[in-house]
Image 1 (tube, helix red, strand yellow):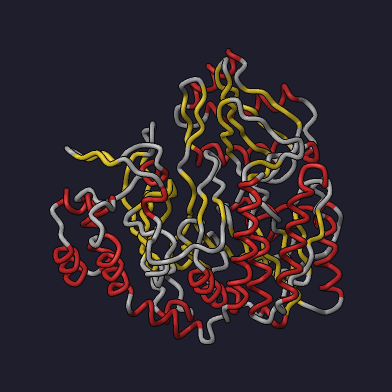
Image 2: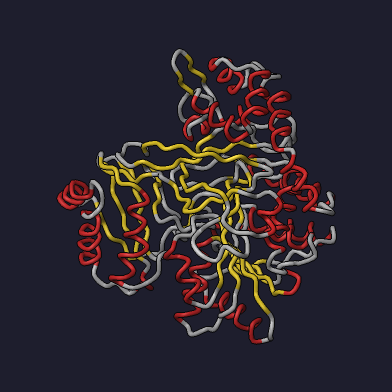
Length: 534
């Protein structure tokens, strides 16, 4: 209780500092300047953070690899930043996801470094706001960005959202309340730009299990309003019914207004799905989606309802990674935000599999970044290439694009491993085609218990499937068709490791419906189906 009180006190103070700091007057000029100075910014951080502190894990990695500050500077100026980073990676200067999270030590030949995520926190800034990542396989990492970094992210966001003329549209959102700070931060950001969100639908649980979060949320909203920021109060979604959100969109359209909707990808699918199921017209809605991969199946649902879909890609510890432009009307392609991050990729085997993926490696560039990381893996893969559009972003210098991003995390059970990407196609395409429903109505959850792993296939009752046995048999049939699936299906089938449950998918952190979710040993699920924090 004391820890929570301190957490909320920090949030109140961070909110006050953020509101009192004016938005960037000219975001385009600021961001263009950092695009032009990306190599200088990187080297400045290397000098002031990494090489100024022999205890820094990257200092030890560079020293082990035979690099001093002069060598790093020479490589960057000679080869360019991205090529130099690729060279550093080949020399062993990188972090795996587990090394960054502190789940395992950094181990290279003759070198062992014990680390925790706090070892990579940027000492040049003072954290004020607080967020928590909500990966499907961990409790998440607490991240405390500075006010300066939040204001910079706000400037980046203004370029992305500005393409869609928010001042001319009714803006609505489906975003969580506390303990996630994402919803409140988005409300403040839009209001500070003079384009306030008109309607905020929230997944916040009941008064019984979330009353204290609602009370603190009301206090934060009151504080923001006292400071002149028009933050709307959330309208709570009861029983995961998204028809009210669809009706709100339809009502605005019937008034002759265009609608800009934002939220996680799965929430966009649920709103679009509710619209089609209840014959609610929402054609013409612009969906700005993030927080999770935009798969082809999920895009198709929103487009079938008459929407246009534009993704963005962020990582809570690192900030915005990519934003789409108005010319990117298909797939999941985004421009890499090269002003604040550098992204390279390398071909590697995914853990415990024979599948190769293009694993993405991220490097933060700004002196105000929350973390200082070089070539860190976040268990995401994707296709990195030169941008193919001819938009304003590309002309500014956002010349790289990233597409088909997904986690190469895995689902394991009884010593059997299947690739997440393969299973997603079964969950989002095969099962809906056979039994009905949408891509977010099916979820695979691995539960670790004392008697071994149980793989739970959760099927939303609204999908219409009636027989648990039929769903289970069809799922195992589809698994057999995957790489390594024959052994998996046989073992799971014989041991009864797969069980089908007609229940709503678990919403991770109040934001995401992850197709694959590993709750871990002896985990318990809340009654409202919401787990984790974001």
